[in-house]
Structures are given as C-alpha cells and as structure tokens.
Amino acid sequence: MIEKTLSDRISRFVIVFGLTLILIYGLLPWLTGSFDVLNRMSQSLDENGINPSSYYYTDVEQVIESEQYLRIVLDGK
Image 1 (cartoon, rainbow, N blue to C red):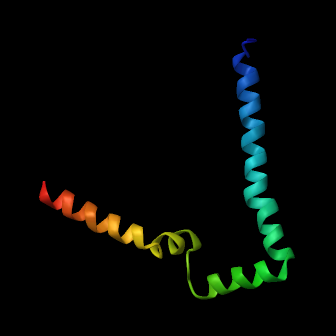
Image 2: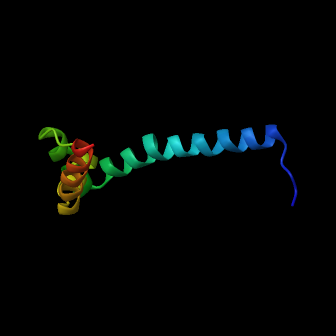
C-alpha cells in the first residue's frame, strides 16, 4: 500500500471539506429555492419557528420512552 505524505493528506482533507461546505451552504439552499414544493416547506418551517432536525426526533415514540428510561436510571444513582 502506498503511503501518502502529510501534505497530500492535508490537501485532500481541505478539498473534501471545501466541497462539503459548498454542498451544504451552496447547492442545497439553491435546490430548496429552485423547487416550489421545497421552497414552500422551508418557508412554512421558518414561519412557524420549527427546527426540522429537532422536530423529527421528538415525534418518535421510542425517543420519548428512552428519555423516560434514562431519567429513571440517572435519578436512581
């Protein structure tokens, strides 16, 4: 197996990190604004003050059960 030099690894990391940032902050917002359905959903979430990432996980019943279990276990110690 060919070993990469530190400078090669760092440059690859910087390139991948940069592309990831472009995807997250450039391409995905552009796609959201380009498609009417996604744009309406995004505006609706913003108007109602809903954080989509927290909204998803709080609606799952198992999450509530696991939170209750953790509270019981942690309070018992």
